[in-house]
Image (cartoon, rainbow, N blue to C red; front, side):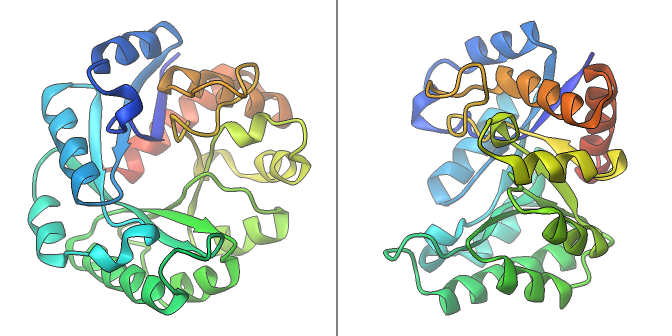
Length: 253
């Protein structure tokens, strides 16, 4: 079995100085590759550094909506030309916290980064929190079919799932899919076609069962695979195989 964690943050301070240990932990649970996701200048630089120094890691860089006011397009364009960079992310909209930049600023920066992704044919990893309506309209107006869009840590119901699938998105599930109190996510995972499915941890956040409440790590992608297999009524091997191949396809590996 080979598993690809398509969205994790080994560039976070929680993992500082322990990269090889967490890579080794991951391999023990069949997690062979990971996409290290940026969110601002510092996290982008660290994602690239890790990808340059550790073979199973790939860098995805961009400006998270929380850091929309810091967006530097020149820097993004220069960095995505590096061979270790396989995508742009995480980018998107987050209306949950009042202190985040206002929606119009988030939307502007999201569109700017989508435009870069279109120009350079790069896949994008989308962060969307409490903003499905606006996100759907923006993505509907951007033809990203040639590059690809990943809906990171999808937590919507089947209706939203089908709307995003109709736009050609890849749907990625995090540890939330293992939570007992997430029936809508369970149903969405059950209804996501295997050829559009991805798995992730978003570590150190969103730790899956049976370790919920503790710090997350890439190794725990295995438990995301197990949860999806349960809801789809198939084997973990099948989920792992399809999601591993899908990750290679969307990231052009």
